Image 1 (cartoon, rainbow, N blue to C red):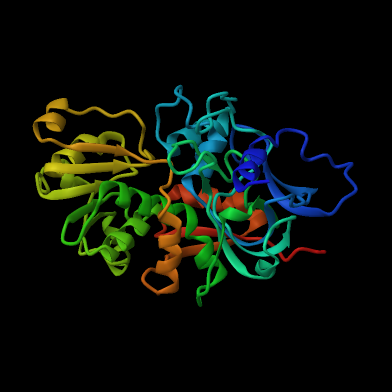
Image 2 (cartoon, rainbow, N blue to C red):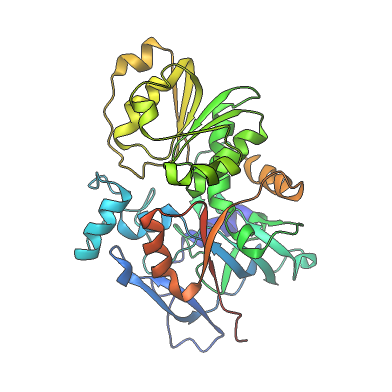
Length: 383
C-alpha cells in the first residue's frame, strides 16, 4: 500500500467510529459532534486507532489551537456565512446550525476528532513502516497532497479525518517528520498549522531579501509565524498589531509595528512589496492600497470577514497579484523542520491547557488578548 493510499483511506473513515461496544483499547479524545457552540465539544473515551499498512500511531504530546478548528466547528466555511469568526461564534452559542457546506471542500465528517497540530512520539507502526521511528519525537504534516504536489487536492488532518485532540492519532507514515531540537513539546505543538501556512504564503508570494512585507494579525499564530519567517528570508517586516501587543510582536523580529489604522488612512500607501493577510474584512481595500506597483497580496484566511469591497482599478492599474493559499507546496514542511533544528525560529506559546479544557482554550482564543499560540496537552495515556 502506498502513502497516497493511506491518505485516501483516512478520508473514508466516517460516522460509527465511536462504537463504545468495541472491546479494544481506549483513549481519551475531544469529539466534535456537529456544527455549533462549545457544547459540541465532548471529552470522552473512544476506541484507540490501530495503524494499518503505510500508517503509524502517534502518541500526542501537544496540539496547538487554531482558527480553522473553530471555523470548522462553526461551519464558517459555508457560503451562507458572511461574518467574522468571532461574530459567527457568538451566534452559534445561541443557535446551532448544521451546514452541509461548512467544511473546507466537503461536508465535515462529524463526529470528528479535530486537531490540526501534532507534536508526538511514534507509538506503533503498521506493516511496511520503518520501526526505527518507534519512540522518536515527531511533527505531523497536517496538509496532505494525496494526488501529489502537481495537484491542488488536499486532505487535512483534523478536518477531513480524525486529528490530534486526542491521546493518539493515526496518520500516514509519509506525513511524519522526525525533529531533533531542545524545544518543549508545547513549542513544537504550536508549529505545524500556523508556521506551515505562513511559510507557504511567503513561498507562493516569492518573498526575497530586502523586500518590505506587511503582516496583518501579527500577534496571532499565523501572523507571528509570518513575522519570523519573513525575517528569516531577509525581508523588512512591518507588522500590524494592537498597540498593547507591539512590544511582544517587535520581539518576534518585526522591524516596525503599526496599528490597524495605518494602512487604512494611507500612511503606508504604495510602500509595501508584499502583504501577508489572514484578516480580511473591511481592511482589505487599504491593504491593496499599501502595495507598490507590481506588489503581491497573499492570503489563506479571513478572520475579520470573508466578504470585502475594493476598487478594482487599484488591482489592475497597479499590476498587482492576488494569491490564495490552502494547499501547501512540497518544500514547506521540510523547510520548517530545518529552521527548527537550526534554531532560526521559535514560536510564542501564550498558554497551555489540559486537553479536557479545550472549550476554555477556544473561548480564551477568541478574546484575542494573547500573542502567539494556545496549546493543548493530553494527559499521559493510562495503558
